[in-house]
Image (cartoon, rainbow, N blue to C red; front, side):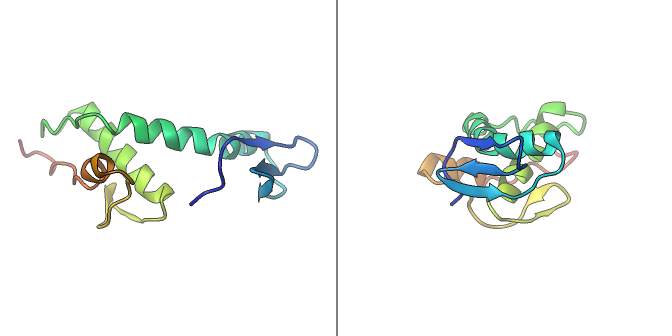
Length: 113
């Protein structure tokens, strides 16, 4: 489990703090520090978006299916998993029963309806 949100950056030290703890030390670039500090909110937003029904149209050129596949892979990586060609490896990464169902769905194979 990650450190509870919100996270904030200290512009003088380059450190990121959350829940009274140092989350990251001496981040050299402000852009990187901003991204790290936003991580808990980004994770929550991604989890919320993925609670909705997936497209699953199977059309090879479907930008929504590709975005959904990338979102699932990113969420899986954020939860400590690894990815293979943008698809999640085995294992549930959600918490509630609905989340487990949605997150454990493998994206449709490319080119198949």
